[in-house]
Amino acid sequence: MPSLIKFLTIVAVFAGLVFAGMLALVSFVEPQPREMTQMLPPAKLKP
Image 1 (cartoon, rainbow, N blue to C red):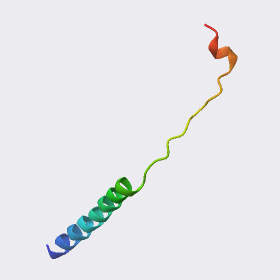
Image 2: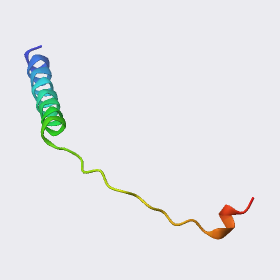
Image 3: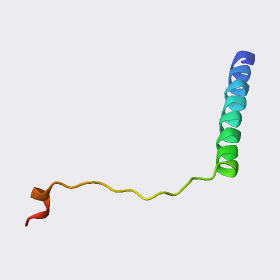
Image 4: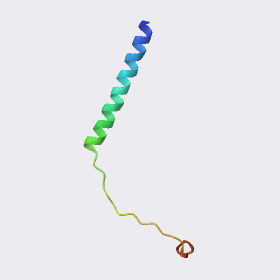
């Protein structure tokens, strides 16, 4: 049983680190909006 508790503790700490990393990315990284263009072949424009 102690090995199960140790394993669950390690998994919980790892999950906490992942969650903290995601929270830091959301808080500190601001996306840069930019215009996007895509060329279409003329054959796709005909009905």
